[in-house]
Image (cartoon, rainbow over all chains, first blue to last red; front, top):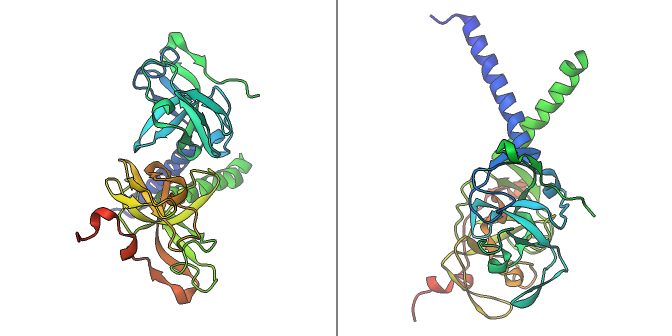
Length: 153
Length: 165
């Protein structure tokens, strides 16, 4: 026979599991989270297996600045994320092969490693709605810990 | 200690549970405008629909689904439209009469009220990453309570689905 106090204990621990789970979900989804970089496109700033901290508040309030490194959903695969630098904001003229104007609601993203990066030069401007996070700092490897934000103008 | 236990903690936990529920399961939203007439807002009465996040957590969409997404032109706007074509389909754009092939990871969305709707005919194929939810029920007004059907009108079928003549 199960003792009633055991059921109460199970119920209480389940409740606090749900509560803490929801708080943690909200923090990671809407405030900040850790991410691991893959691929060479942001070298030398970021290389594979670097751990970065990203925040979700400035994309939520649509505050984008030149030079910000942002995490965005890939244009042609919603489950894949890319990490690039904002080069152009709406209204800017971009000279690449032909003159392009960044339309309202879009940004122009490029990787720091210009020789080896698939970015807006290939697939055009990216809708701001796809941007999920802004990179704040690098925390791993320990030798290269640094802030990655730029002063807003 | 008491302020933390009796006030801050319940508020933080309450907000978190609500937000997590909305993020994972879904929420109710108002449909504004004429772009989805006659399916939504048929007599000018504003409809409220249940938008399910859970149904499209893997970004699985079908032709005829009604979805909500972040406008590519204005990231502050959420738009509700019908999916007309999915990747691999061929669509004739209503505005320019161009033939468009929908690339991988994109879809083609249109309002039911053709000519009175800001949709793929203006901004081109929609990246799946912008999709936020699928409309599954009309919940208000009560007389309009219904499950939303996945349906496509014959005249807007993708060209690759049309019977050969």
